[in-house]
Amino acid sequence: MTSMAADPRCHRSIIEIDDVVFFYEQKKVIEHLSFSVLERDFVGLIGSNGAGKTTLLKMIVGLLKPTQGEIRLFGEPVSSFSDWHRIGYVPQKNSFNPLFPATVREVVQSGLYGKKNMFKRISKAEQQKCSDALYAMRIEDLADRRIGQLSGGQQQRAFLARALINNPELLILDEPTVGIDAQTQADFFQMIRHMHQHHHITFLMVSHDMDMIQSYLGAEPVDKCGSLSFYVKHTHEPENCLETNLTHSIHKLREQIEVPG
Image (cartoon, rainbow, N blue to C red; front, side):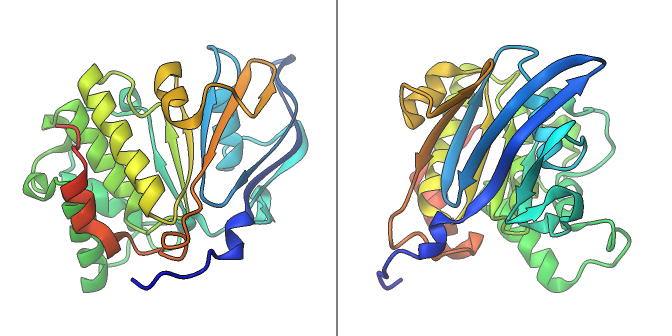
């Protein structure tokens, strides 16, 4: 790819949190939080239990409404936002039912469905997108296995493939390495660091691992609100900022990183 000047859109706000307050059963969980996530940011969110990490994620994806204030995605209030294909989500491993009767391919393909197309037939182009995502995560050989039969690291690769199938602009990860052994955690984090550096994706990751966050995002948070701390790193290499297609560097992704097994 020809080297080009950095795209000025890389300074756009992807998430804008404007004076947000949230009460749960008379208890104030989040108090007057204002924060912006810019395009190509990698934001690590650290906080103690009960600090409001999951509550904030639920508000960002529209599952909860702020008691006060507003959250905007790509400049649009969450309440009216509809382009959810622009956002990928990787849940906590322990939120998954291992008895769920689906193959890896079916789990990954489910990332293509929205409320409007839940029962539509998958096109050849969409089948190829699924194959590309499986290949990028090195789980194409596991496509017909039941998701519950996979190791923890393999399951997280499947969830990451599901989140990436629509080439999202924003990827939200909710403690994606909980319940996974230390070496697999390190491999997984190496993988998403590579993706941040070489793909046009903005990351918001909730984590309990302070050492892992600080090793990539720096020793000090750029902002704090109550018990929530926000660590931020921005990748703004001109040759990377224009690429939006996951498949553009699939071979690099497979060759340059070790993925969890």
